Image (cartoon, rainbow, N blue to C red):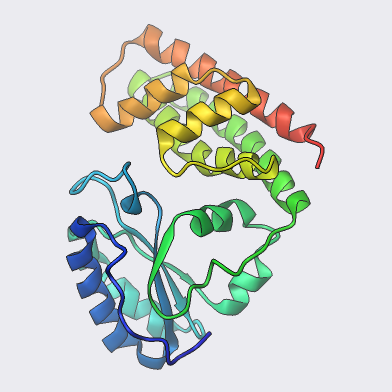
Length: 252
């Protein structure tokens, strides 16, 4: 990466996040100095799913090298950042990114799809991925999701509020997996949640209704009764299970 490419570029960012990101970059530039290689905004804050004041702003900070001083710098900023709805940044180094392509393909593909580098060189655009690695990670993540759903339901004693939150978390976590599965099929990936769900439903013959409904729960903080919870749990579980079978049998 190029230490000299350190001019701040906020023009591609949505207006609501420019000021908090500008102050964030200013502090990190001063505190991390030459160890700071790039700052990239990723995720929903760049698109139509972003709700100002409610949604977090997610960032990836690439450092030349990781050290405790850098971690302490970020840790000291945690509270001020949270007040501006900036989530704790993901810290990476170029070596970490290079050596993690085979295990974090889902995440890096999602970053590559929806990101804006505001300082330094773009760490994600040049990346390439092996479909076999991404397919295996999709399968592993989906099967792990099934375990979390089962264990969460049992450990909560089927508490409807807890299970509702588990389902909301599950659907949120499904989005990058669905996009990665679309990528495996060489199909264009939408950035927003609703389009992602609907396109995946068309391509993989899954039912979108429950996933869309659970996503709406997150936005509206909907209260549900016990029957609604059970129906949604069963439908979500069946969808994740079907996706795991599909990706298990996917021919590349």
